[in-house]
Image (cartoon, rainbow, N blue to C red):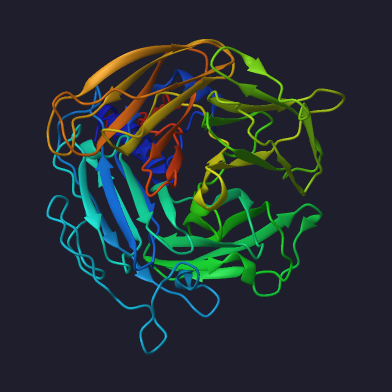
Length: 529
């Protein structure tokens, strides 16, 4: 074999290794190696997404929407995208049916009510092997509805042309009872470490963390909860085993005897990798999914506080060895201001701090910016989330916004409707320019794009463009074109019976590309024999 052939093998091997890492974690090698910033970026070849079981309520309905955007530089080659049901495992202390109207059969197990074939997306029953929401082409979303209370968690992969930017949205409406409201979540990639500031073990809340294992071997995850005085005492084993290709829901209040609102959950995979999502159900103010916070950072952005928020509760945790002193600012439509009475926040190391900001937006949309206050020594990293309430009295509804990473290249929110979608864009530093593209609708139409400029230190809340002549749910993709960093979220409103039902999804970068560094070593053989 000559040296040219071996050099090619070495290059292909290096590319496969880097691409494999990106496909596994959803991450970019830029973060690990500064030299990779000058490297060529290529589309990822495989993506994995996990969707938690939506609800066991008999009065719930769920819409799933899947989408992969069209991308320049992605060859029109073969590929597939779809999801399959995960097996469900629960026990006496981890049964989400206990809090949201779920029913049980005579043996104490939740009834297996197989999903219906929705036609549009190839919906499958639990335990079936027909993929859910298979995509036929990039740029066109597929959607399906699920009206059964026994809908399973879903495990899916996309490869080839469908992998870069593949996204799946799960939107559930619960019409009555505990948990009444609109619950939405973007299905997430598996990982080994998650932070959830804003969870609760209080008696007025029932918070379940759903752990899903996408792999063919068992995974083990540790659950730790931190309150205002440090880690809460454990009343049971905090280590959870998740069988292969299965999901396990765990009621957080069963992990400790201490009752506390506004605490922080850390999920760490001891072996394997998992997907983690928290379903928070308030007895009086509805419920929603609480997404994981962005990784600990010294400065964080919480994008998209609704203009009509009647209350906002900020929860922050300092995971490092040092206390964190933070400036609190609200980036509004025209500038950034300091909320009266909440100029700063001190967070002790290993502890959770929470402050009530009230109707902080005062009728204008905004985003929270948390930055180091200064002083001696290095700034301490934090994780954070905001609990937002709209409405009053018995017509309240709750949603959560976590600290969200910047969009480096693009991010997508699926399942937008003809009415009720609001896209929030915030530029915490320099002015930035973005392009927002509405895809074709699930039932046809053509994509439409618009360009927006967001001034530094401000939030722009806008109704995203609609597809031309299209019907059905559609996707909205945000692409950063130039300027400073931009953070984004999408709010979906579906009011019902006087209740302002809504849900908010953060839009972190979709990590649809991976940096492939230049080979630092000649891997060829020295002779041509």
